[in-house]
Amino acid sequence: MTTLLDLRLPRTLDGLLARFQAPEWPGMLVEAWVFEDREARRAAEATLRARGFEARIRSAYKPLVHAFLEEIDLAGVTAVTIGLPPDAAQRFKVEAFPLPGLLAPVPVEYAEGRTPEHYEVTLLRDGQPEYLYVFAPNRRRADPIGRDALSPTGWLRTFPPGCPVPNLNAPQRTDYEDVFDAVIAAVRAHRWPEATPFFETLEIAVGIGGIERKLPWHDECLSTREALHEDLYFSLLELFQQIGGRPVGTRDFQPGQIVPLIDAAQGETTVRVSIVPHARQPQRVQEPERLDLASRPLTELEIAQHLARLGGEGFGTTSVQGRPVRGSYFAGQGAGLVVTSGQHANETSGPVGALRAAPRLKRMGAHFALLPQENVDGYALHHRLRAQNPRHMHHAARFTALGDDLEFRPEDRPLERAARLEAYQRTGARLHMNLHGYPAHEWTRPLTGYIPAGYEPYALPRGFFLILRYHPGLEDQAHVFMQALTARLIADPALARLNAEQIAAYQAHLGPVPSPIYNGIICEIGANERMIPPFQLVTEFPDETIYGNAFRLAHTTQMNTVIHAAELVLEQGMLAGKELVA
Image (cartoon, rainbow, N blue to C red; front, top):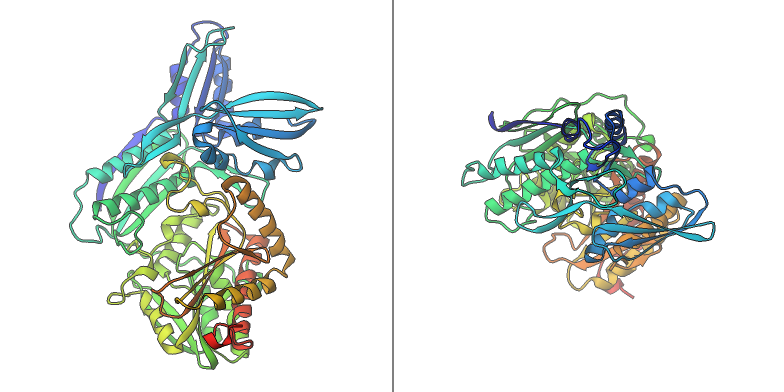
């Protein structure tokens, strides 16, 4: 093991209390913004009041949402208008998500404001307008690869008694920001080898206070620790791409496995960055569930057991960390089909949906291959991360142990991707059904610009949607197929309700989607010459972090997509050839 950083930092709230022991003037007002939950902030306020201060400590993370949750009285309010800071209105509109859902049935409208540092809130109460200003503490900073970012920051104001003008009004460093900067500095200063992978595992262990708050709208929540995981993982991935001389965002780069471990802590904030060997993660043992009633992600062992029960001719390969990648081939009639899931291992409804769909494909006599979990190393990491923080997205588990996206791995060194290539070869695949998911609640990177760079369309959930890629010249078939498929899928009232609510909220904050919406389902349709099969259907269900009935709807929708798509291909001849296009 090589240690790059081992650091202890004072907690920001503790530093604030140490700074203000006794007021210069009785009744002096202290206002602060920090990355801490309500209970910790209220306790610090009580301590300051006992010392003779007036105190109000607010959240620097999503300050407008916290203002409505903690301070703004909605009794008698019939309408809300929010004026957005004009220089970055779109970014602040996203930061206000999901206020329309939280405040319903009270309508919420957004408008352009006039002040760069405040949300301007107008409440219509009993027919009369009331005006409030909600401060949004931010600072301009360069992110680790040099992009300009407007990011939340700590802030401190003090007021002499009875004076409306603060004698101190300035940004303040927080332990939350200092952890991030220290990790980036340590990684940047290290001498990395010329060749990739740079390491087997880069582990970033952080113990820190913060916010964990479930919101009463879909799967929405507020989590600064989840956000720190996302900021560290993607910032380090981008930094290593830059160090390796590759374009930022490239998916075939292999730095190694980056693992942020962000846990709750009391007292001091701790951070340790280490280069460690790959660890064999023990399989989690849980009570088995019926597939159709599964309320949680399956374990690696459960996936293997369900696949074995299906029969078929087994095939597969071995992962970088030595785990089996298992598939089954079923000889049948008609166009070749391939069903895969788990390419991105933190997207967990796909494996259940694929395994549920397979018996129906067998009864149809389909000629198909099934790979229910392609990225087995990422899946093992995801189960490790979920054990501590089950409601976090954990994008560190998205890619493989080499740090790349297996779909983009070259064919001369396929490793895990070899199983998919064999599935194509065995079936002569006409259609590849690739089951995916994405965040079920807002995805933020607060310290690098708030909205996740490169993944802006995925910042907010937009319901279940579909992507269909096709070889050039097959566009007409693609659109006819998607219209027919979505008509069948939207017949599920639970799915129709989810999509209607999430699409409306998405468009209220990020604007209209550029893709067509067929039968209430967003459809991204485009040509792709790189694919081997002529068609690839990608499902995208907002499944990262969901459990219970929400998870059941997710894997039922994944299953139904596979079954309906197979029916359209095998029974109605869709996607079979140009001559079938009307």
